[in-house]
Length: 409
Image (cartoon, rainbow, N blue to C red):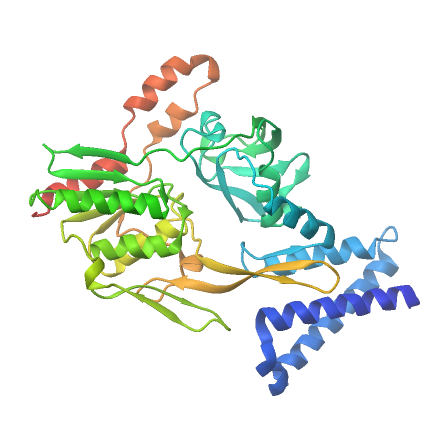
């Protein structure tokens, strides 16, 4: 074995020790010995694999590239939110974080190895292109998202206002196997106003927050206080495609409907368990409630839905949610690289980890097929498409309204 290869093995081993100990073993594992021994055994296997790659692969490989790929895979094997950033990637990441950036209106995560659309911001370039949650971004600027960390995928979708981003998009819900090549112009995407409507002679108040920021939850609370004057009013909270916001605001929103009990918990190996309990002083209404969710409901939206469902405060209608609920920590490594590591996960009141199990409604309703057909029309038939989109049957909404009609105010 050459000295260069031995040095590479040593460097890899040091990185792996850092990753493994910070990510899963800790000092207690070192003292106990058992987990530490297991880690060293795994590094021995990795060393042997690297040796076989160098000696038997069809051409002499770049050990740096092999190591980089291995570390990316190691972090992604934990969960979709954990990432390894090489020294070059981390330098770009830090520089970009201080700039501020324009977007195309996509909230993405990773599923099945590729970047997956979680939700689309209304009024954004992505919505105008009819991109939907569940669509898969196969590549960005010619680079496969399978080979990129989630942090770098999000970074590449953002940029200076007026610049373009080109990516390949697979639309599984539209029955298309071949990816579409799409170019969108980045822009400052404004958050739309909260959707608000009244049904059944104003007996049902419909609210669609779109995001769960402090300002938006303030709006919802104000509306709930105002409706207290109407003792017959019921509430339909539409959390479909609600994936952005703040978890603390999600807890606050759930508390508006819950007078007592647990709303959520947060815990990690080195993060002490935190229990977010309902506070009587923040409770607003006991009006009959139904919550709408879909595959685009993630993060803060899932916390609210899970709290309502587990407490039996109301019905949750729609599709299984996306499954997003972690807290990340950035850990810088000696060589200039970094880990973005999930260090804690949110749990529902019943103890289900939202990242792992998502939220399954107690009333499951799949989207109606005519909605997909209306959105899949060719661009040249856009006027007819717009008419179909306006008149398509929203089975999830109709089911939620039917349930509310049966509830006593």
